[in-house]
Length: 172
View 1 (cartoon, rainbow, N blue to C red):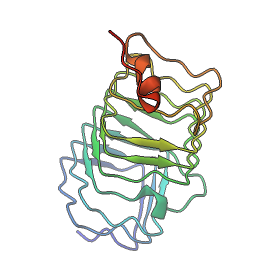
View 2: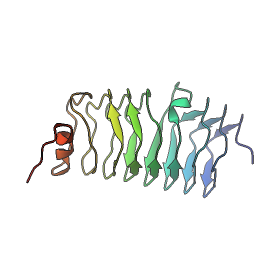
View 3: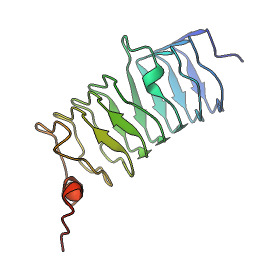
């Protein structure tokens, strides 16, 4: 099935392998991706509105190429690696129990975003607004408080020491 230049609404896509496919100029509204492999999918001019990704493998996606208007999604139990979320408005987005490895969140609006129970190993936050975001029970994050907005951001102990990484402080 071709996924380029198509419209999908209220569709559940289950256990599909989309590796190296193109979603270019397509629209996904109120769709559920469950157990799908979305490695290296082309997202140029793709509309993703109110979509849920559950138990998916998401490798090398550039979400910054998506259409920004009404852009929204949630992730649950997903492996998200080497993907780019830069320059996006992700306010209120949920990343629940995800492995978020080596991803970029540069100049990203992350107000009220939930990263609970997620592993953020190697992910980079720069000039991001993390106000009211929740990192409770998240781990392996490294966030420079000098380069990000952290107003009323929630963290858990002992993982909060990741905020000190930039200063080279060692706790014993």
